[in-house]
Image 1 (cartoon, rainbow, N blue to C red):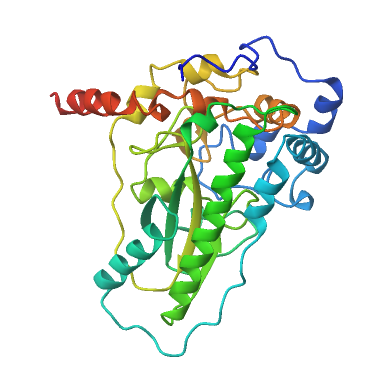
Image 2 (image 1 turned 120 degrees about the vertical axis):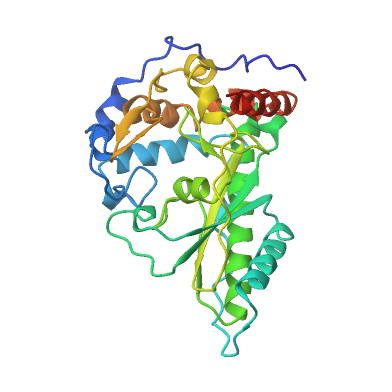
Length: 330
């Protein structure tokens, strides 16, 4: 299959939201997300939290309704919400060393649908305002997209391949995270699962970066050295003693500074060419007010992660080599 863009995608600058969609936006999401703030703080609940926690409940309903028009998407996303309950914590505790338990956690996760795994100490900034997580460790699971299916985004009423792959990976994340949380509970430790697509207490990208699963891309998504931006995340928090994995720099952030592919591919022009200060951190940021209306009308999106050079299987190895060579130069 060629690398040419999906012909169903509008070109950058040719799309404008419908007036009724703009009316549902109601308030700007950028200040709520902390754009321009120089002090660190926890993130506010956002678009994919329950509608009573943010101003965009009606727009969220439009997005959900439109995405379900795509063939197969209802079943794909329903699987992301179907999971077993959490089992009781076993009275007998596995008292193996932290190193041994960490290896067991990794083996279990990778044999239960996860494609990659990272572990980080819990940080209060990893939880949304109004939520709490008491466990000292967060485990992040990475679920890789099928690239050929992902390239079909955005979906419509005749072709649901792209959005179905999104749903399928969220469903894998649900199964994988609940399986791991229950396995940990059977070892005598507390554990909770945090899959998507609905948001809960736990942010996933910041601990994923801390755990070495990737770097933040200009499109606001994680870029994995193994899967590019074509990856979904799920989390598990626990009090099981573990050893953290380490953060990794492989050049994605540096590459994004000059790459314009996702910026030029974004129909609403939501991807900014420079970093912004967001809740005390200078980082890549996607304009909420431009992104979400398109997302709602287009029955989901994902164009930026599909077009990202790091996501392309035949390009990623060359990028890794090039960036490694550049980073090694004095």
